[in-house]
Length: 281
Ligand SMILES: [Zn+2]
Image (cartoon, rainbow, N blue to C red; front, side, top):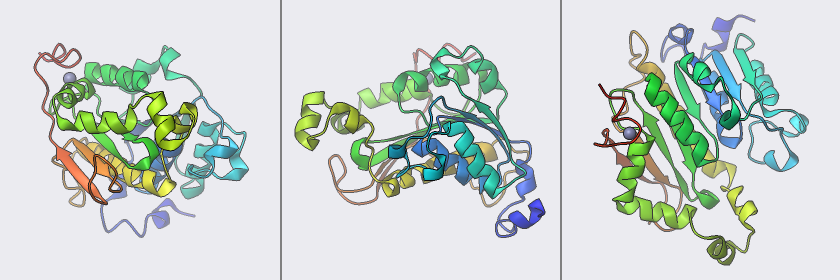
């Protein structure tokens, strides 16, 4: 089985060989990161490093790229198997670690073309943001809002746009922060009233796989955009995406007013940003 044959159906779009040196670090191999890795493998990416410390449990299967036969396996091992099933020529490195307590994280990040950030908590996102800004490594982060009503994708473009901390400053001054706070950061009591669910259940309940899939698709697209920007020649098929932040609404639940609503934002570096303004020379 030759690798060329694998890509027959996409080779008219762009030269997959251009991606041979691209190295993608996937931080978090849950429902977002696992699907994302598969999307990238199916787009011709061959070099992956997967980071996740958890094993696949029965309740993950309904939204994860790995099904029941992987229950009990480490997510990094399960996702590796799925990727190799699509393309045996793929190289996978696996790090079964918690990034918040991993001394080599900066070294790993510096060794990759682009970082795909798919963790489910703020501290890990801000840690990766700081390291990427310091080392001028692009990353793309996505988050699904509670109950899958929508989500957001942010792409950090070194020297071209703001960072995740800049985004936080912008959100504090705009209506978007209110909207997002209401859906994602409401109090435990409110959540129980709204959904009749325990906080742990809500936190781990970002909607149907189909709802997450919209966000994963944007996440993958923004990653391909970030990768294209690093290539000596940008494939014509991958025109640059002008915005670096989008908010997507799946359905008409506040703050969204209709199905499939999109808000596009171009975020510039913010004056006085604690993270990126001190790195600017
Ligand atoms: Zn910043």
